Length: 504
Image 1 (cartoon, rainbow, N blue to C red):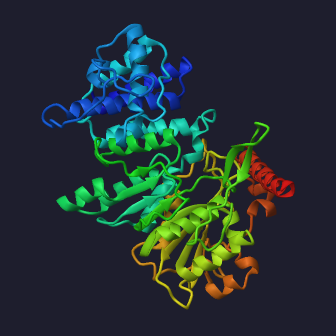
Image 2: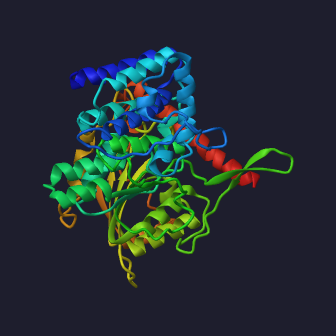
Image 3: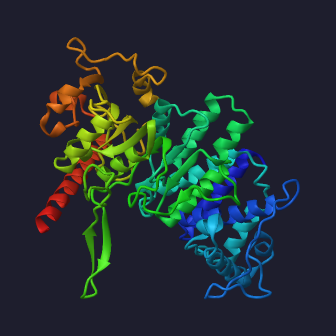
C-alpha cells in the first residue's frame, strides 16, 4: 500500500465512525491503543526479537486470571463478534493497571467502538500493515492530522491544548536548539514543541551515532496531568521515532507547579494552559462541589499567586540551567497585571535576559478571546545588576487579521519576525520602526524605559489601528465578525475575573 493510500484509508475510516457517533477524539484514542499493541507485537518478531512482557487478563480487583488470555495483539486479532468486544474492554482495563509506559498509555482507557464489526474493521486495517516499516514521517502525518482534526472539533474541547503548528515552528526556529541538549515542556499537551524541535535538529545538523541516541532517548522531558492527553503525547512521540516503546516514560503525570524536582534543562518551549486562575474542586459539608483558588507556596518563586500563568512563568525560569533559553506563550495579563504580576516582571528582568516579546494576533487559537504573546528569555547567574538591557518587541497583532478556517496563520506569516529576531546573531538586530517609518513592527525599549512605566507594564504597542482611521480599509465581513466575537469573549472573561474578585 502506498503512503497516500494508507493515509486516505485511516482518514476515511475516521469519517465512517464519525457518522456512527464516534468522534475524532474517541477514534484517536482507539487508534492509539491498537497501534501500540500492533507495533509492540512487530517488535517481538524478527528482525527485532525484543522481549516484551504483557500481562494476562485481570479480574475487577486487578489480579491476573490464571490461564486467562494474554493482553496482546496476537490474542486480540483472533477474537470475533461479541467475544471480541468483551475481550477488548477487559484488556484495556487490565493494561491500565500496569506500571511504567504501558500503564501510562492505557490509563483510564475504555472501548468507544461498541459495534464489534466496526471494531474488527479497525483492527484489520491496522493488522494489515507493518507499522515499524512505515516511515516516521508518514505515521506522524497520520497521527498529527487526527490530532488537529480533534482540536478543531469544538464539541471535544480538545483545542485548549493545541498550539498552532506555525507558531511552534517559528518559536523553535528562533531558539534554534542544538544536539546533545535537553528540552522540556511543563505542560506538553500532545507534544507539538517536542516534535518541532526534533525536526529542527534533524534538518539542521549532521548527527553522529551518539547524538542520534541522545536525541531519541534523552533530549525530551515534560509534564501532562491529563491522562488522555498524556497518552496522545506518548504515542505521538513513538510514531515520530522518539523514545522506546518499552522504555521509561519521559512525560510525568505530576502537576509541574507543585514543587521544584531539581531538574535543570537547556531549553524550555511551552504554551501553558489558558485560564487565569489555578483552582481545585472540593466537596463542602453540604455535599456540594465548589472551586477554591489554588496558590503554590514555593520558596523559589518570587511571588505567591493564584494566577496560573504567573506560576508557570516562575516555574519555567527555575527549570533553566544558567544560560538556558526559554520561549513561552503567555496571555496579555502577564504583561500588565499589578501586585504579584509586577513583582514577577521586575524579577524576571533582573535575573534573566528578557530580550524578545512577540505580540500575537487573535484568531489563531481554538479558544476564543485569547490575546497572547511569546516571551523569549535566557536564565543568568546571580548579579547585582539587572541582566535585561533591551527588550525587542515585534507587534504581529495590530492590523493583522487571521481566522482558523479562511485565513490561518502560516509559518511564512512569521518569517519577517524570525528574520528580525536573527537567531544566528541576536546582537546584530536592527529596528524597523523609526520616526520616518512609523509602521515598523520591530522596536526596541531599554530597561530604564520599561522600569519607569506604571507597574513595569510590558504591554507595549505603538502602531495605529488602520481600521479605526480608514473605513475603506476594514477587513472582510467574516474576519470582522470573528474579531468581534473574540473581543466579546475577552471582555466576558475579564468581567468573570472581576466578578470572582467581588464574590470573595
